[in-house]
Length: 401
Image (cartoon, rainbow, N blue to C red; front, side, top):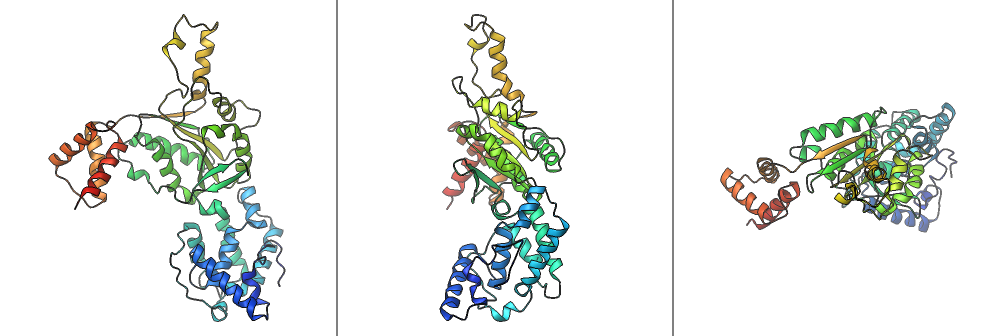
């Protein structure tokens, strides 16, 4: 077995054992495992080469971890070690394995849908005339652009505080900003702030506030989808997890090559809830600063996030220093440098949302029918907003013959 130093765990996989084994049963076992992996992942073409590329892209190694930790830097000596390791693996990347491997034109039942992996595999085609240094540079650029493992594979994550790990969300909504009808000003504000963040320029934490069903959460998801290849990722946490924000921040510091939006959806607090203090401290005021590769985006129906009553503002309030209570209530929202307001759509905007959604599904309604049916649906549901429009479209499409 060859010795690898920057990718030392590469051969800790019995699929590769047939290269050095004279035991037919071991060879058969390797083939069985490779076939199962190929179907589970969706690998195709020359399976041995595809699997080798997948391992180097997906499993952490010294080079990929160093690039992620340093924000894209790799030392000259480590680069030479990586090139030498790939030189030792070169027989996998040239044309010869196609003659040795048992499946060199495999077509999986469900091909892999990973944008990052498919791009990498495409760049590694027809490299039999190239040297190991070229292959090394392709992998290094992949690590810089997408990262490695789940960071490269997924756009969004949830945080498992018990294991202190990010867990990829496999079925993340594939929405784009162009799918959100209207709210042009709001989208421009979000895009400008997010672009600055990705480009390592000063950017603000964002509070998206307004009526329900107006596209606040969808806007954030769309931003992540459109900037995935630029290194933007989303981590959604729940209100009870706010106490673990310092723990999450420390985890995200280890991925300085990527930019993370910590997403708090539909956030609000009652007077008796104290979790908001963890959020206040994490955004501004705590001993440990917010990592440079992290911003917090939150959506809420409440402008100040914490429930307020008229009693809080009356002179008869029992508290001795009434202004202190009011300041405490609004101090959380003040920590969001950018507050984007989403208002309910007008009647015409509501109908335009319906029209656009129907047209994307190949349906065109005349003006009168659209108005009658759309407004009738609105009156029998929860008001005029994008969510109501989407529900109407689903009902209309589902009821068609």
